[in-house]
Length: 95
Image (cartoon, rainbow, N blue to C red):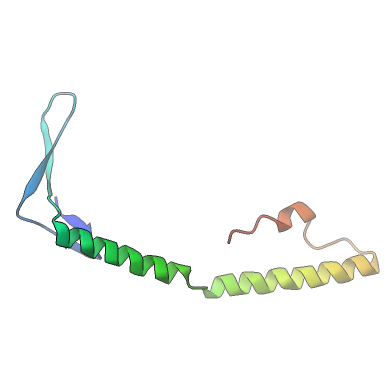
């Protein structure tokens, strides 16, 4: 079985046997990762983490919408109207 490292399927010549613990039968073989494979995987994970940390458009849209709701609710309270979003629901935003 190949391993997936940094967006590529890699088949190393050295293999590791995967055995069934119940009867010790051979299930499959997998490629044995070397130091270079591990380094590529770590670098790829770091690039992915940096990309995911950047603000995305949907986060900006969500923040804008929540701000609009806050303004509306503030005006609604001033006018004696019911707030748009119940108070408990306002704290359920995932950041």
